[in-house]
Length: 273
Ligand code: HPA
Image (cartoon, rainbow, N blue to C red; front, side):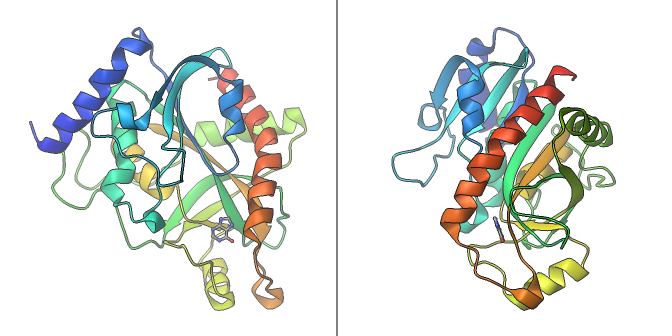
């Protein structure tokens, strides 16, 4: 067995007894979406540092944790605390928790993030279900020897975001009276925000929103054969011809308030999965 596979298996082995044989849906909670954690009926919260080989978060006082519990009548494992390339984590490190989820039997991954709007029809606070992405990070978690037991060398990317889940999320939003866009997410490395020229370029390239997360996890999940649903909270809108600084405090506050709406949307979607 390769070293990385052994590490993933050891991490999964330490969590498996808490799952009681159930197949859980994976949740990756982005900026401001931590509120969902409070809604989960807690089984157990495992600090990342207690899981063998698992990375820990850089945020002071919050190493991150896996929460196993029930939500919307489903078994879930929430990753409360995530890893970004701009923090210096490698793509392989970012994919580690996703590999662990897959080793635990998870087949569906639900991801949220905060993103800057590029589509001029978007407003701060809107939600966007991701239909496709553009990887502008210049990085990929699958670089290096392929783990054939996990997935193929050249994974297909015609449908990285499960169409059935995208459609279900749109229908559910309509029923719930929640405004929801559908669009393309461009991932950049960060941590510097985009210049006006970069914003113009990303829009011309076909992106509706830009952010600094999600893609490494999605590529890993697709490689592993998981169905992915991802929704962005549009925390600010970047219009290159009327460019204004994005204020990080505003971004976090918008993510938190719209995050509550997104929590409601995810809950209704999960009830139907
Ligand atoms: N750019 C990149 N990432 C982001 C933004 C942005 O404007 N807003 C929230 N995350």
